[in-house]
Length: 446
Image (cartoon, rainbow, N blue to C red; front, top):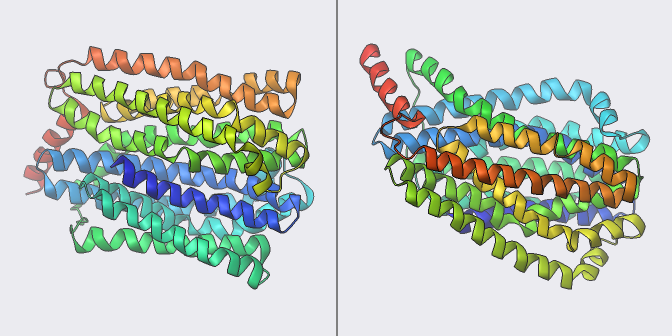
């Protein structure tokens, strides 16, 4: 599960990184900065889609684990409807207010205009990415990790092929990268829906009463998951705004770093998604010893991986900076990330694993509080202090320190929760309440 997920994630984020590389080849720092601002705005839309996919995966997996195939298919349908609704609503609310949003992030003049042009093309395709993320979560709930990987690989291939064609051959520049992204999202959605419908008949239209039930119960998981995920772009927006004070080079450097992190640490990001169902199934079986073991195994694995990758980044830091043609402040920030700030990704991994335990052990609100705390109280004051002492580099250092503090809090809270909830059958979790009330609802409808 972790391997296939990491391959898919790495493919997606590698193409994002290649986008930055192609854009940097145009020789205009303003374009790289515009891509950085646009990525922050897009991150908000992606965060909502990720939150919906977390809820979809949890509901479908719990129902399948309990032998309730029909409710699982109905949950999948309801989740897909939510994804479509949010995919339409987000652009409608965001696009008319782009000038205000980009100004709040610190973008101005030509950079803001270029970022807006990019977003007017990409944001309407949010519905494609939302539906694909939700459907991939359903495939993973069925345990089909291999087919859940193919949509991401397909999208990455389409994006990677079309990027140079649109950007250079057709001379479309940044807008070409945007259209390549739209095409990739459409391809990803198609590849996700085909096996889900064809092989698993994964969607079933629920009756009215059951659909209303799905709205009530599903949102109890979805909203905390969405809020927790949205916290990440909020923190990114705070850092971006503070980084903007130090010029275009600083923002361009941060844009490169933000695209590098999910590529080089894709395995860590994938681990959190893979370990969640393991925790949830063992918790439902009353095997809290295995839940605790999964937590520590995940943290240890993440630690080893982060150290190895950080060592490689350190050894090739010069070549990495040269690859992006980085100079001045941009180069300094990339070198700082390669060592020692890359090591701080371990603490982000602890937060990911802890959040997976919160979501799958019936307490998604814990993940919400931890993530919002990390990206507000653990970000704003520390980046302000870091910036005051060390400039643009201090902003990144402050952000890393906040991650360390909240990783310790999240890890302690997760272990406390696992220990306290030693008898899940005695104190009904969301999973058992869900199945019980679903059966009651079916009897009423029948």
